[in-house]
Image 1: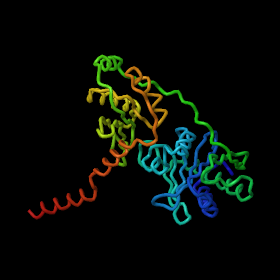
Image 2: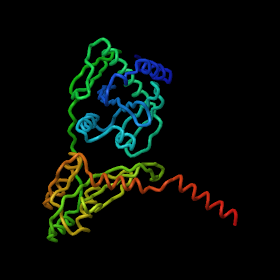
Image 3: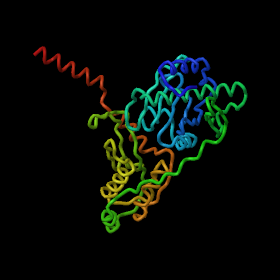
Image 4: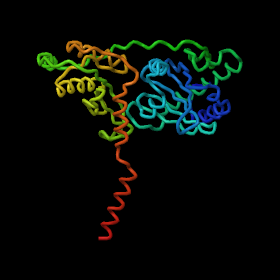
Length: 327
């Protein structure tokens, strides 16, 4: 396959892709690791909500990390891309045809693909076609639902090679230190506050957008909650804010407001635990990991239910306009 790209090339690959219908070969979300010009991406096939199938192509933040999160039940692809919590390309498949493909970027609504993203989509679809050929020739096994392996695809010359192996390990990242005023922590320690309770803490997105400057972004929050006590602290993030930094602000603010220090704080991700632990250790707070933060999930659902109904607002506005006209 030539490295040159055009709309005709993409259309040709899409036609071949639809003919092979590779999504019908898999029972659930299946991980595919593709090496594209020294960049590793992760592709998922699976059933969609509004479409028959989806193909999700993850890039940017380590795809291996997302794949392991998925395998551990800590992340579902539908939520990840529908609310733009990761970087990738979302492909909708309806009636055995690719109906649309859009770009997803962290915190941003879906957008049209840039040229480099179309080239990436072109390569990944062509690679999956190569995988289907390898499966037909029985060169690689068809992976079942419970397999801990994924398909690894790489290119030699103009030919795609395929193998079934363990997904590459997550690349270790040196996280930037979270900065908090030492005096603030000292004041909390000196106050001799009551120690009780177990709190949940996590950043999360809401399925509603707002404009920050000329950028339309999803609303992201950092929340702290306690079972039986509900929401203790909530910070709404600016577009380029560090969510872990704001989470620490929400935790310290909750301690100051509640006048007590929890025994434990439960978070969802090791990355978050690693970054906030140096701040919480001097306060005697221990960190625990849990996949599901039930109290915060319930609070988030309530926040979504309380969003104003846009259609109702429009109808109310029209009725108000018509009554003014009558007067």
